[in-house]
Amino acid sequence: MISNEDRTRTAARDASGPGPYVVRISGEMDYDHAEQLDTVLGAAVVEAADGADIVIDLRDSSFCDSAGLRALLTARRRARTRGHLLVLAAPSHQMIRLLELTGTTDLFGLSPAPPG
Image (cartoon, rainbow, N blue to C red; front, top):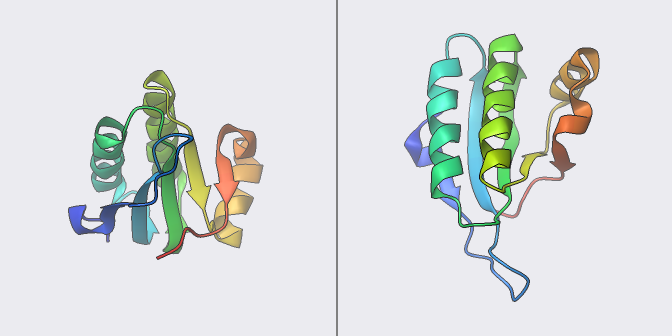
């Protein structure tokens, strides 16, 4: 389930610029949750500080289908137009395989899970 409570801002900031804006996702990113995912990620793009990376923390996400991927790609497009890099943190093997199969791996930054 994805909710506004899952959306958090990281306090870490340094002289090089704003810290990342972290969105924590739990559960499935599928057809049943795609609209909710799109809403949460759209809000993150608007709320993130100028130049901040938007980190999607996927360590508690169990599954992603084409509807979830579409929401991530839409968020990536929105983020790029506002100067943000969208990073997928701690993607599951299934998520990485979905990115590989769809040729979208290079469209996202990938990283380990953020602290917290």
